[in-house]
Image (tube, rainbow, N blue to C red):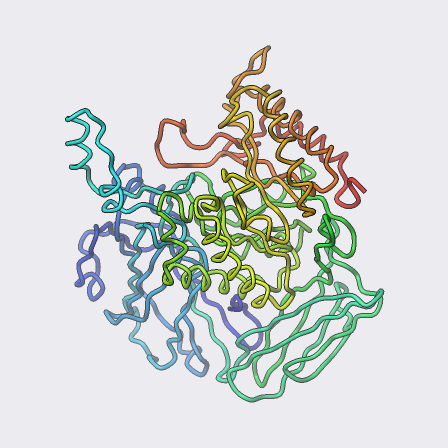
Amino acid sequence: MLKPEANKARTVLSLPSVWDFQLAGETFDSAWVRHPLPDPTPMAVPGSYNSQKATAAYRDHYGWAVYQTRLTVPSAFLTQRVWLRFGGVTHRAQVFLNGELLGEHRGGFLPFEFELTARLPLPEGALLTVAVDNRIDFTTLPVGTSPAEAQAAYQPSGVPSIDVAEARRAPFNRPNFDFFNFAGIHRPVCLYTTPQTYIQDVAVTPSLDGTTGLLRYSVTTSGATAVSVTVQDQAGVICAKATGPNGVLRLQNAHLWAPGKPYLYQVTVTAAADRYQLAVGVRTVQVSGTKLLINGEPFYFKGFGKHEDAAVHGRGEDDCQNVLDVDLIHWLNANSFRTSHYPYAEEMYDLCDRAGIVIIDEVPAVGLGWGQDGRAYRDPAIYANHAKTLQDMIARDKNHPSVVMWSLANEAALDQHPTLARDYFHRLYELAHVSDPASRPVTGVSYPNDYQKDLTTRTMDVVCLNRYYGWYNLSGDLDAACDALAVELDWWAAQHKPVMLTEYGADTIAGLHNVVPGMFDEEFQVAYYRRLNAVLDRYPFVIGEQAWNFADFATIQGTLRVDGNKKGLFTRDRRPKMAAHYFKDRWAAVPDFGYKR
């Protein structure tokens, strides 16, 4: 799905940024979609509704919530096709226009849209209602445990008062993931127009023939029409032209897109009266032996897992926050991050294309299969949802040069039912390669599986490991932690695969210091990374280190978390801890290419 853009052929109109809003429950009043909400409160869009009101009712809400605004389609739009687009609504959305259901979308992190053309003209100030369901369960991505599932699995504590209270608890979300279950309209909402015959999709796949850049393109249109394509360099000079819906554009002495040195060409597609432009980079990605190569050179990942998470906005798309985060990534001398644990807003990918930052793009399949007797890997509906989400993510992000790898899941149960898991993920692995015109490398991030029983991770193009030796296990003993990491890496050496750590870290309270480093103080976080990185440096097949996490982030309440997860190199408001300065110095000395030749 192409991101909306305004040009001579198309118009984009953002919808109001403050909507009427009302919490509901496990159902909502059907009258709400036909009439103004009975008791509305203002709610900013995009943004998480959990963090915009100072009450537990909003923070801990379970079930449906309803947004409303008035929609007016300008008369100038009536000569074109008109579309209503949502960048992302978490986790399930039903959209109504003047009481009529336009459609439904499942999944909170990818765009969806409805064509309004046949419904035009609309009365001025038509009532647009969006009902949002934040409930998670065994079948959703990310995964949670429903109240019914939790009750069925409950083991009596032996204390009558606790067991009675547990049975009487109000329903609430129980995520199988360690980040806050923010909900709402999280990405921009807009009306946009296209000509009657329009460009539906563009795929541009780069490759190299010596110093010549090759851009293989494919254009899909809504009807038979002539297609022309041009490429301009950053100076605005036209470098190549072609006609037809499929072809190859040849760029002599091409400027390459590379981490830290991005170069973007502008591809312009014209079909009948329609026009679409996108920025593309000439770069290649492949796995060769135990290396991941970008433009034929062995790349070393320096970075972290990250979250769309900030005060007030919650998970809502925030350009100001994104610009700051990209600047801090450069300040750290980092070159990459993983979109843990869901596709991010498109605006962030655009920034990373421009900034030369590498992305591992991840499907929101977090915590799949744990404690479920293999049902997740047998249920065709779960696979269908997972496969569609993967295909939609690739369809959205396929043209971004910053995206170098697809991640199928984070921390699925892989060793409890190893053959079922392997077969399930092998189907997704093949689907990812077939769905991506560039056939980027594919991975899946594992933890805390028995790596010798895990039959899935070793089949990926790149082995991505989340490991917390010295924190969740061997806690506080860095000698033992380094020993355990080395033992595991010795085993992976025999698999002849590129390996990287996509998570490792220690919760750290900013401002807590000790002469003798201990768990939770800043000195321990630095010692932890310094010691484990020394182990990583000994293994030539280790191709990267991504600390967990870029910044502290919100989580569900629990005894393991004090005001959220504190493993950030930065605090939640982006103040650096000592470990940020440690990595800034380390990564300045570690080159992007050719490390461990």
